[in-house]
Image (cartoon, rainbow, N blue to C red; front, side, top):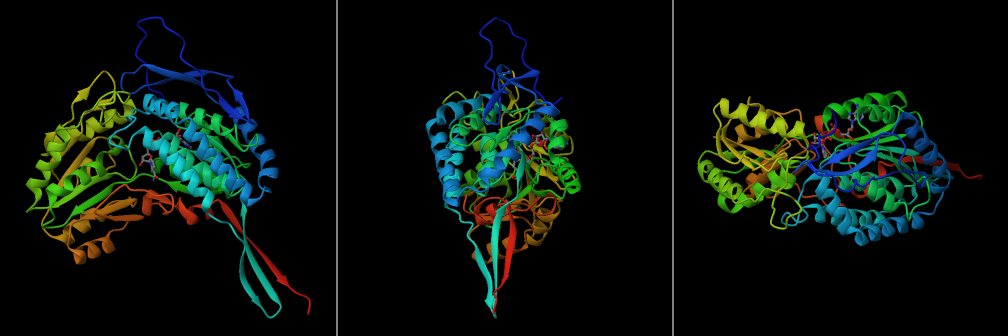
Length: 488
Ligand code: NAD
């Protein structure tokens, strides 16, 4: 069941607002409506239609028609559209961040990394995308031959997004796609569709009809998007299992794929590192958005000499963290977004305790929904599911090591390869460890930092391709060579 269950209504009140799909620039509210739930208190935030296969067909038709004109617009015109979209986010920041908080759960502020930050990121990424270039490049100019490389748009892009950063991830998909001259159909997660539907509705006020369209639903419509012959590029962010399905379907049409998938990021704290000073950074890197971030630290490895101090410092911060309703100004951390994820985090925590881990802090439910206090689990070992699997929630295992080689081997012993980090002060050791870690991004003394100018992507089962920066923009283009032999 892909939807959260609402708390039964106890009083009759006003009807929840309905958020329409946008297809060909027009609002669509046809079909079955579903409730979208606030994961902190299980109240209904709003409702939206569930797209049918024929809704997707309308969207593909609209996006295909719009491509003819949009792909021929000048580069500067499309860069200008990115800036107009940034302005739309600035003007509607309060409404959109409140809506994210209600349906996703993250607090508006959260120490500067809540839903307000998510909308700030949308502004930053939209502005940054306007600054990249897609200029023609002369590859060869000799002996009467001139070969010019052009970057041309691919066609209709199908975007499928998860529930953890619904609008920011949507923007990561949409902005480079339309900047490069493609048109887009985006399908948000059925857990958090409303903020994406509203953001796209607002963005449509500055885009030609059909350039950016929404559909809703879960696996069935996701399968239909990834296998649709009218869709030429898939931009997917979500779990590894689903990403593999997307790629299998896309292969049938040779649609291009960028897959941003799961992770099990390790942080290695060097022997002799100032662990008490570094604990806030490690804690933040583990618990941003209550741990529901692909690039969060998911395992912390600490040398045996510093182990007790590191665990105590992390537990002290956890105990000081105020978990609750994201709409309250004093809330540091919000709930887990949905019931399945909540059950998974509880199951992994209990399983680790049964196998000998010590719960130093956290793991308690707050409120009636899916909020849990951040848990610090000491005495964790490889082989425990909490270490080997992606927990994607507010619990972090801390693992003791004796030698750096052992720590590096444990950190790399995973099918994932999204990010990793090394923490300490010895420059040689920092470089040695960062060279050995197998991941798309290796951080030094930080984790989970992203920047629109810096490419980001996973290796191994964490994904294919990169997003962000010029490199990310290029993935929304085909290379076209004009090979010209000049008459003598
Ligand atoms: P998910 O794979 O369950 O769902 C992601 C999206 O895919 C949703 O929109 C869902 O409706 C859709 N979907 C489900 N089945 C489908 C199918 N058969 N075909 C096509 N689409 C289908 O992931 P989730 O639970 O929403 O998100 C959490 C996961 O996302 C975690 O593993 C996390 O690490 C990962 N993630 C990765 C990144 C990154 O940049 N690498 C960023 C955020 C989240």
